[in-house]
Amino acid sequence: MNSGFFLVVEGTEGAGKTTLIRGLASRLAEAGRDRVLVREPGGTPAAERIRAVLLDPGLAMEPVSELYLFLAARADLVAAVIRPALERGGMVLADRFELSTEAYQCGGRGLDRELVRGANRAATGGLEPDLTLVLDLAPDLGLARIRNSGQALDRMEQAGLEFHARVAEAFRLATGPNLVHLDASQRPEQVLQAAWSELARRRQAAPASNRH
Ligand code: Z5A
Image (cartoon, rainbow, N blue to C red):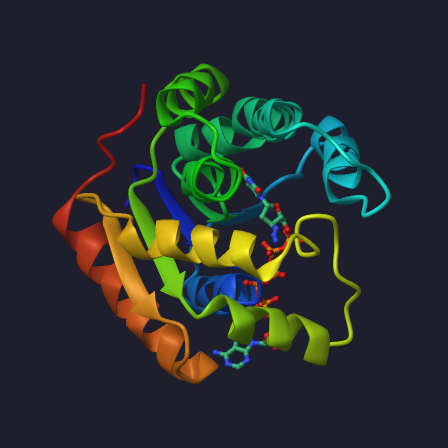
C-alpha cells in the first residue's frame, strides 16, 4: 500500500489498548510494514511534559484547563509525528485520540460537546482516523487490571467510579462509519485476532480518504 493509514485504539483505562497495539505492531513487523506507534498524551518533548502535568496526582485543575492541555499535546503530536508519518505512506497506531477527549472531557467532566469538537478540530487541522477500534470493558474491571498490574493510579485514574462509569458509557455509545467496537473482556489473543481481521478488511476496502 502506498497511502498512509491512521488506526486509533480507544477505551477506558485498563481495557487493553497498549497490549493490543503492541500485538498489532508485531504482526505488522512480521508483514514487513512500516509503522509508527504513538500514545496520547505524549510523543513529542513538549507533549511528554504536558503529560506529566496532566497525570500528576498532586495537581488539581479546572476541566477546561485539562481540555486545552490535552489538545495542546495533540496539536504537537499531529504536526510533528502523525501527519509526517502518514504522508510517508506509513501506518500510525495511536493509543487514544479525539474520542478520548469526547469521552473524558464531555462525558466525564461535562464540557460542552461543540466547544470540545471545535477546539479539537483546531488542534488536529481536521485529521480523522481511518479506523477507530473501541475496546469495551466495564470500568471496574479495567481499574482492577491496572491495580493488579501494580501501577500506581494517576490523576485521571483517581477520579471516582461514577466519573469512570460516565466515560465508559460515552465510549459504549460512540458510533461512526470508521468506528468498530470490540469486546475487551476476551483473552488478549482473541482481541488481537478480532482487531487484525477488522484492520485487514478496512485496508482492502478503502484507501486513506481523510487527509486534509
Ligand atoms: N485522557 C483524557 O482524559 N482526554 C484525552 O483527550 C486523552 C486522554 C488523550 C492517559 O492515561 C489518561 O488521559 C487516561 C485518559 C486521559 N486516563 N484515565 N483514567 P495513560 O496513557 O497513562 O493510560 P491509559 O490510556 O488509561 O492506558 P492504560 O492504563 O495503560 O491501559 P490500557 O493501555 O488500556 O491497558 P494495557 O496497559 O494494555 O493493560 C492493562 C493491564 O491489563 C496489563 O496488566 C495487561 O497485561 C492486562 N490486560 C490487557 N489486556 C487484557 C485482556 N484482554 N485480558 C486480561 N488482562 C489484560
